[in-house]
Every structure is written in C-alpha cells, then in structure tokens.
Image (cartoon, rainbow, N blue to C red; front, side, top):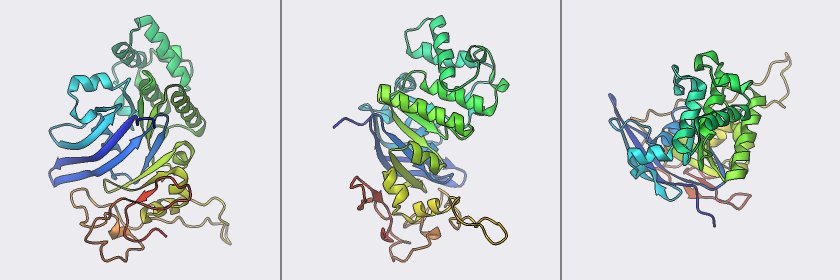
Amino acid sequence: MTAPVLEVEDLRVQLRTPRGTAHVVNGLSYTVGPGETVAVVGESGSGKSVSVLALLGLLPPRVATVSGRALLQGEDLLTMGPERLRQVRGPGAGMVFQDPMTSLNPVLTVGKQIVEGLLAHGDLSKQAARRRAAELLGEVGLPDPEQALDRYPHELSGGMRQRVVIAIALSNSPALLIADEATTALDVTVQAQIIDLVEKLQADHGTGVIWITHDLGVAAGIADRVLVMYGGRCVEDGTVDDVLEHPAHPYTRGLLGSLPDLAAPAGPDGELPDLTTVPGLPPPPTDLPAGCVFWPRCPVRGDARCETEQPPLVQIGGPSGLPHRAATWCGHE
C-alpha cells in the first residue's frame, strides 16, 4: 500500500488562558493518503483550524503546548526546528488561511508575496518567478493577472484576495494542501474552478488535501473521507458516502438535519419549513464534560456512561465496507 502523505497520531493542543487551560484538541488521529481529500467539519470552536495550525508550528509556543506525532512524508512535523519547518512550509505543506484580509501583507504587492515563496523554494530567476506568479493568478480565476501582480491587497475584493491566498498555497505544488474555508468568500462559479484546480493538482502530483469547511455540500462534492470534530475530538469519520448518508453519531445527524430541504413542500401560506437546529451551545474548552463531550446537547442520551465515561472511537459497520468509526455510547442505529 502507498504510504500516507500525512499521519497524525494522538494530537493534543492545550492553550494557557486567563480562565485556565483550554483543551482545544484532544487525541486526534487520522491519515491523508496521496491524492486523497479529507474534509474536516464541525461547528466553530470544535478545534478544526487549531489542529492544522499546530501541525505547521504556527501556534505561539508561549501559550500553546502541542504533543503527539504528525508524520509528513515520514518526517515528524512536531519535532522539527524553526529552520526545517520554514523549508517544509511551501513544497511540503501549503496552507490557505481562513481570513485573506489578515494573511496578506498590506504593504507588499500581490506579485511580491507570490514571488517570495517561489524564490525561497525554487531555482528560478526573478523574471521566471514573476511569469509563474501571473500563471498562478490566472489559474485561480483572477482577471488580468499581469496587472494584478502590481496591485496591493486593499485594491482587491475579498474574493480576489482569497484567490491570491490560494495561489500562494499552490505555488510550490505542495505534497499536502491545507485549505481552511478556502472557498467561503467565493461565488459558486469560482468555487467550482478552485475545486477543479485542486483536483488537477492531486492528479498531477498526488497531493493530499485537508479541507476544513462548514459547508457540507462542498464536503460532499470534493471529499473522499469526512472527519467530524466536536469539542476538540473526532466523533465520527469514514468515507464521504458512509458519513453523510449513514451518520452514526448524534452530532453528525444534527449537522445534517440542520441543512434546508429544498424539496420540502411549502406551508399553506407559502412559508418554508423551519430549520432543525442542534440545541444548546458547544462546551468551553476550559470546562469539557467528563463523559461524552456531546452528551449535554445530545437528544438521544440514555446510556448511564454518557455523563461519566468518554466513549472510544470504534469501528462500526457501514454499507461501503470501508473503515467507519464513531465515538458514542448511544448506539449506531
């Protein structure tokens, strides 16, 4: 079998805060294979973004404690020094950050910010790097890419800035691409172009992709596997068909149930049916429940262990016959 591009084992992240220690990621384990897309879904605050920032050494060591193992092409990211991490970021792992407003330098032109990474990790002249930068902007759908190279971030719309950030992440054809809400600010046409571009990168280079998203529709369209996070833990993972069509965890079913049903009949006065919501709020990471992290909001809790004992992530049966795991005491019916 082909070795995974990324292998994460028992990742834990703790942050020191004025309210005490925040346990934001708790024992996360997963793999990403060559050419595979793993979608990470869950509510805000579930630990999705922090988990990938920890992998790339982007959390301030003063307040963050990171443990576990994260092998990128066989080398542990969590034991790398700053200089080695700098070499890996780019050709090893590229990241599309969630907010393009703050991830671009406001005093440098778009072209300089793309060319910088190309020169740092490749054997290119400045002229060749500039030509490649224009090609990248064209590939992500930016109009008039040559002119865009000399523009500053504030001269671009939010969607255009998002495309620049994606171009930077793709510039060195990384072995692993981490996309944190990469298409949120884009219209559906450009969204489709970006997804097609990522799929081409996977086909050409065997790139593994971690796609963090709130949009289950995007996850259904792009992912091979889905990992559902809640309270810093993985509560369910499996193939995209098994998880989205046959969810086993009550939280996953709640997420899917909150999607609008466009085929549902309207009421007598033409009103649309109410959306289903997951009751309550996620627990604060400084005060996680002792048992199942979801039990205070769970509509089907009934096992005596729900409040006192954390359920393990165990293999369950699925229609595809491929690995499908869930962490719940309440059964998988």
